[in-house]
Amino acid sequence: MPVVLLIRHGRTNANASGTLAGRAPGVPLDETGEEQIRQLSARLGGRIPARVVSSPLERCVQTAGFFSGDVRLDERLLECDYGQWTGARLNELRRTALWKVVQEHPSGAVFPDGEAMRAMQARAVEAIRDHDAQVASADGANATWIAVSHGDVIKSVVADALGMHLDHFQRLTVSPGSVTAISYTERRPFVLRLNDTGDDLRSLWSARRRRRAPSSDGVVGGGAGHGAG
Image 1 (tube, rainbow, N blue to C red):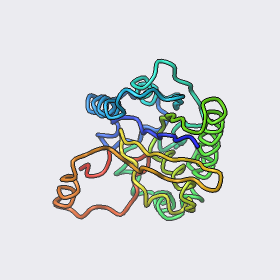
Image 2 (cartoon, helix red, strand yellow; image 1 turned 90 degrees about the horizontal axis):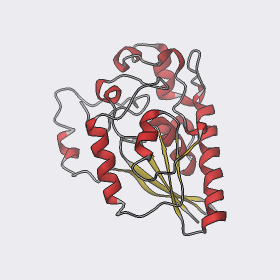
Image 3 (cartoon, helix red, strand yellow; image 1 turned 30 degrees about the vertical axis):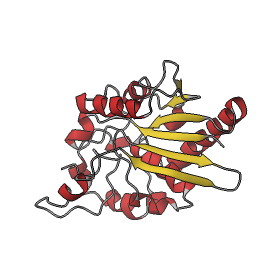
C-alpha cells in the first residue's frame, strides 16, 4: 500500500513566540521554518511524490510548495478551530480550566466558538484515508505521497493509526518541519516514522539542562518543537 508522509509546516514566528496561531491568516514560515523545510526537501533526494495535499493555511501551502508545484488543498487538513483561544499566548491559556481538559481528556474538549478536538480528528483521518485510497487506485501500491498539516492534526491522525484513544494523543510530539510516515495496509496501519527531523541527537541532552523542569503538558497547536525554550 502507499506511504503517506505527514509533514508539519515549518516554524513560524507564532511558534517561536509561544502564540497559538490557530486559523488566523497571515502566519508565514519564518527563516528557521523555511530552512527546516529546505533541509527536509533535500533529505527526500529529489523524489517526486505521487500527490501533495495541504491545509489551505499559508504556512502549510508555503511548506507544500517545496515539494510540488501542483498542491491540492483540503480543508479537512486545516488546523483545529481553537475559537476564542486563537492568537492567545500559551502561557496565558495554561491558567484556564479548559487547558486541563485538553491535557487529560481531549476527546471531551470543545473550544469556545470553535471546534471539538474529536471532530478535528475525524475529519483529518477521513481526509488522509480518502487521499491514500485515491493514490493507491491511481498510482499503485508502491506510491508515496505527502500531506502537509498542523501539529495537533497530525498527532490525532497518528493516534488513530496506532489504535490510541484521542485522550492519549498528548503523549505524541510532532515538531515543525518533521515528517511522520504511515502505510495503511489491508489489515492495519503501520507507523514507519514519527516526528523525524533528522536532528543531531545532542538536542536530547541539551533539552534536559534547562533551569526549570520540562513540563508534562502537551503544547496546544504543537509548539516550536522538542527542546524549545
